Amino acid sequence: MSHRRNLTVRGSLAAGVAAALLASCGISGAAEGGPTTITFWSWTSGSQEAVDRFNATHDDIHVVFEQVPAGTGGGYSKMYNAVRAGKSPDVVTVEYPQVPAFVTHNVVQPITDYGAGELRDVLPEWAWNQVALGGDVYALPYNIAPQVFLYRADLFEEYGLDLPTTWEEFRDTAEQLRGERPDTVLATLGNTDAALLAGLAWQAGANWFDTAGGSWEVNATDEASLSVARYWDDMVADDLVNAEPLFAEKHIADLQQGRSLGMIAAPWMLGNLSRFVPELAGSWAAAPLPAWDGTAAGNYGGSGFAVPEGADHPEEAMEFARWVATSPDAIAAMVPASTAMPANSDLFDIWATEVEAANPYVAGMGVPAVATAAAESVPPAWEWGPDMTDGFARLMDEMTGSMGRPGGLEDALHRWEDDVVDQLRLRGFDVTT
Image (tube, rainbow, N blue to C red; front, top):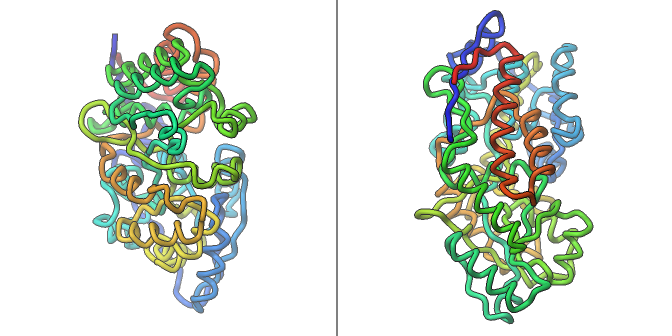
């Protein structure tokens, strides 16, 4: 049975978390203006190119870029340690799921008073909600990852397959394909990808965490989430999709040899396709993600710029962040290295033109138009929990051990929810069920 748990905090941790996430916070003073050198830490593709273009077009601020390991691969630990040691960079990349943890651990400061709110109207509501917590803004969104369906248009045509628009049609098409070509599946589902599962639940209307009532509520076993889990459990059990790590050796071979015709993706993944299967250029197309009721997409990645506590130059850091988030020049600099979609809706058309011009692999796939429509359909209520680095790691472990077993994903969600609640209790939260 689905159940929702209310989490309240106690003791010294209560004051810190509640103040950071559920109440308005103060803000540290900005640095004085003038020519200033700031440091920027990130691992995302296109970062160096953006910094180079900014430095070439600005005289008052010079950005020094330091590439750090991917966030969950050590980058976030490096950021935490730098803040604790009093050696904070000025601006960092933080993925949306990790923003609450950065807030609760006082790693980043509010940027509300640095003009972040001026961009609210050009950002999708759901993207804004990823960074606006407890009455303050803690990061400036600069890319998003609405889910789309990438498929082998050439083989769909050759095999006479209709493009599915609903998940029911998706199964029907998978059955048709499997019946006619037993060595081929319609798509591959990443069996170690917790963010992918979260995005699919998001699309279905789930909301795993909720702070609207002034406390944490956890519910990864609502009917929307469990319906998604049951659907993919059945698809895997009936051998209608491959369940394997995306872009691992087996998956790449399946793509190369046409044994897997599609994947649930986001714009940033086009870089992976062009890198791992360059010989398939011109074979792919993009379509809206099959839907449950109506039209909706989940989100599958994305990040914002945050200013760490103790940063020497927060005003200049925000000037750089705003430039990346608003400038067509920044888009032009980044798209040869990154196909990630900007969060700023004013840049969607510019990105569409620039990303196709800079990436022959992308040209003709229809990704910008499909992704733009998808970005407008993402449900806005989704929230992340207070420690998704740990949460994703635990969910990945549950998925890896469960997918392929009868009811595996459904059981994984139940165990994961129980584990999340237990871990939050250990960290000082009261849990009521």
